[in-house]
Image (cartoon, rainbow over all chains, first blue to last red; front, top):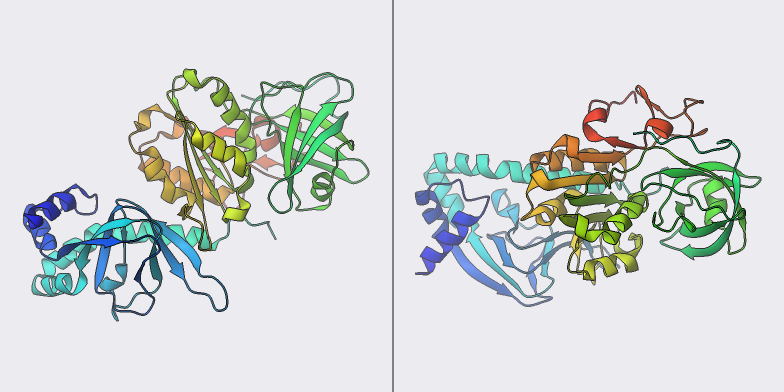
Length: 155
Length: 282
């Protein structure tokens, strides 16, 4: 029953909607529900990136720790969005902290589970690449704009 | 459409007295001004004035007040040079010389019946505010009102109290995002374009009239995001900025290809300038 619900949720998500039913069923086999309280740390920099998350409710802050100062929030993630992409890239460790800003409900997908399935079926891996790289490129472009500090006083 | 030149002599400043000076974010202040001669200045949202700090110099500054209140002129200025520093430092009772209004306007009245989408970055909210006031004053004439506003950090959100008021209205959608924040900020963090999908959810892109003002790079990327969302280029308007001096198209300082920003702009329909945006030579 729970597998069926995962399939429905994933099939409605823009990043999964164009996958065929069999592939979504495969993703669903690696999925589980998550719940985080406000202020709860979802993961920390340097820890194993064994899962990635699809937020279904609430908001998440992605933070970078700064010595002797409060961390800097570089990005927030909201309902319908994904975070925790380090599961895709060796050494599979998170490069930032994720903190629940309020009560967060999410679906997580087991990265090792997905990687194993992709290694067994490279066509699946390539399909994932085709679907998700555009999303990652969009995020990269956004972060590039942030780095430009557009709203600062012109030098 | 370029506005007719102000009369009688567009090069002659009129004297205004500061009736209120209000500090905004760091290095930025808003002054409210009343004309010494008592004649109100009628302006259209998006137009600018040349502000003359006596003995220091003159700079162009967008009008940021309510067009329905022509007797009170409002300008928000950031301290980035000698003249702007003098203007930011003005106190109640101080005098200022003003020429204007100049330039083209946001076609906000022509957008009646459509969903007005305002996208502002940093101080770009100031030139948009008169158009936002117009829509708020005539809310029933518009299908929708959405403001997407990006700033550097929570401390650098211009008109923060007013934004909260707008956000509390049931007929207005407001999305605020900042580039960076410290813990305690519970709002959105990310560039303006990341807030657009949520802001546009449920709105037919064919009904949108978009008004965009901010750093030119921000506007370029915002226009790309709007195009990807299905908003037609001929329903997107931008406010351009170049070094303006005379404000009348005489001096040529603000030439932008075949246009002068001061007289043909600053507001342009996107498709009329799209080929020039991003050209390094301009």
